[in-house]
Amino acid sequence: MFEQIFENVRRKSPLVHNITNYVTVNDCANMLLACGGSPIMADELEDAVEITAVCSGLNINIGTLNRRTIPVMFAAGKRANELGHAVVLDPVGAGASTLRTDTARGLLGEVKFTVIRGNISEIKTLALGSGATKGVDADAADKVTEKNLDGTAAFAKDFARRIGTVVAATGAIDIVTDGVRTFYIRNGRPEMSAVTGTGCQLSALTAAFASANPDRPLEAAAAAVCAMGLCGEIAYNRMTDLDGNSSYRNYMIDAMYRLTPAELEKGADYEVR
Image (tube, rainbow, N blue to C red; front, side, top):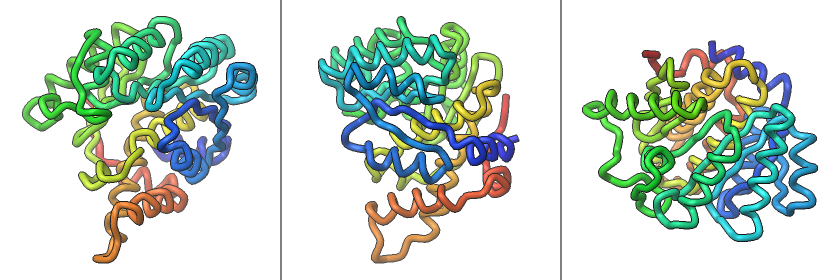
């Protein structure tokens, strides 16, 4: 299943517009190139709406919000909706501040998202209107474990069904659901959390996968999550005693660049319920 999804990304090379986190913008661009996509970044209002029109996907990441770019996110999102393009929301840090929470929920109310990709604390904030995060990381109380997995998945599934969007709640165990079917994904390494921006990269990646597979948003999001986690595993296996998180970041991008659709199909670790 994921082999064809990834083949479509490689073949179509979707152009993805990213209004994204200044901290990780370069890594997002490189991860998009590595998967076979093509990145473009524009966050000036006069530029962004026009750029959105020539792309096949839009990735909105609220990691470094400011008053200038917030209206751009709304305008670009609405333009992408008009054109039927895939749109991904990464509600970075929703629940950590009023501005982040209000912006994320405002976007959810005015823009139709193909996929919402965030940690479980951010997803809970969107669903409930308030929440708690540890900066831009999930709150410890929300950590997904085998013990609370089914309950967390039921929460995500209900939220996805209610808003008609694919929800990807990522963490130690990833949950990707459209409200009907749910993927439980166990690819990845805990060391990925030591690299700033792996979530941001995944959201950009998800936009590319969804853009290249417009009729299969659930499978596209799940394939992107598996691919990112698998690359984390491959990169970790390449580490030496002299390597640290900087090398690990580069190895993950290298792993995505070299990953084949057949290798993704073979290495994806998931179940569907």
